[in-house]
Length: 264
Ligand SMILES: Nc1ncnc2c1ncn2[C@@H]1O[C@H](COP(=O)(O)OP(=O)(O)O)[C@@H](O)[C@H]1O
Ligand SMILES: [Mg+2]
Image (cartoon, rainbow, N blue to C red):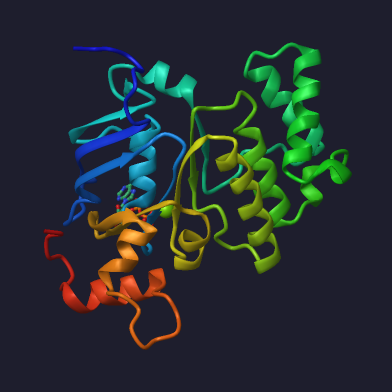
């Protein structure tokens, strides 16, 4: 039965498998993932873990070999158009016009998203403000630092306030200050109620931003839960003065499960 976007979790993936031709091992080997409305979920894993492949499948850009995926209530294969209308995607590489100013880029994206000239201008102002770029709004994007670009890229994906936002490695390659600024932008979104799935290689980033964490290794989920769930895996803090961090969870998982072993 197809009920459309009823009260179901905005991201539901079951048994997702994907193998690229010529690769010995699958990029994704039966991934289950659920993200509830309004949550920020971090898909955490090293290089080649399958993060980008998962995001591409969730955003209709790549088709899974097996499994079912619903985003914003729609099936990513049979109802790709509806999925695309409901989501925003910030990829690993920005699609900005270097010669245009930040404001012009935002107005252009607004027009492409179907806003009239006036609405596009108003929305551009709002988004420059959210991204902390009002002061530099008239500067050509070609002169922007990596951190400013990432924030502008994030802003362009918010033109129409998507129900679900995907961000692939938001801060890879950024310096610490730019990273903190971007974290602040993501938090503004999360506080406004947008459901966010972000991928990251950094424990610190997941720790900082995510309500829920899914740890991916070699295409398989090796642990998932709220930050508190995962940290409790490591045990109660005893005589130690500090609470467990995600890094403890990571070390614990690696110590107790050999690479490639099933999650349960
Ligand atoms: N288009 C592709 N063709 C062949 N192999 C790919 C392709 N995209 C990804 N892979 C492989 O799939 C695995 C997962 O890649 P990816 O999803 O990019 O991981 P991550 O984003 O976590 O670094 C890697 O082994 C990678 O080499
Ligand atoms: Mg990637």
